[in-house]
Structure formats: structure tokens, C-alpha cells
Image (cartoon, rainbow, N blue to C red):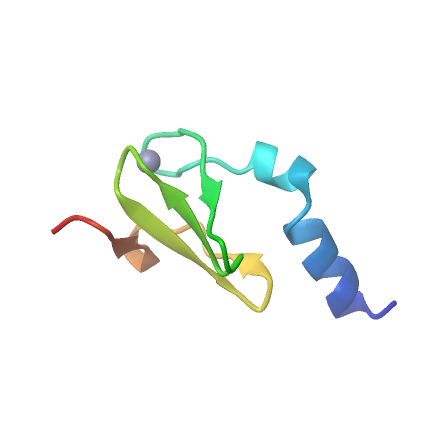
Length: 66
Ligand SMILES: [Zn+2]
């Protein structure tokens, strides 16, 4: 198993998802269907997952509000 595979496995593991929380409201996040992002419903923000690593920055997050 390559280091990248280990990182990807760890990143998308349930344990890590439980640790991850929204940096803005500290609330829980939901993994998208494609597993390419994490959504905070409270803030209507989508945090991207780049190369298997979640980008937990409010400035980098995509707003889902219309
Ligand atoms: Zn939030």
C-alpha cells in the first residue's frame, strides 16, 4: 500500500469523519455522495476534498446559499 493510499483510506475513514467538524460552527459534516467534499448544513458550506485531504478552511469553502 502506497503512502497516498494510506492517506486516502485514513482521510475517508469514519473515525476521521467523526473528528472532523466545521471550522466555522464546530458542527458535524456530511460527506458528499461522490466523496469529493464535506458539507456543513448549518453554514451551507461545502469543504472540498483535494487529493483525499479535506480542505478545512472557511475561505476555501464553497457557499451553497442562493
Ligand atoms: Zn458550519
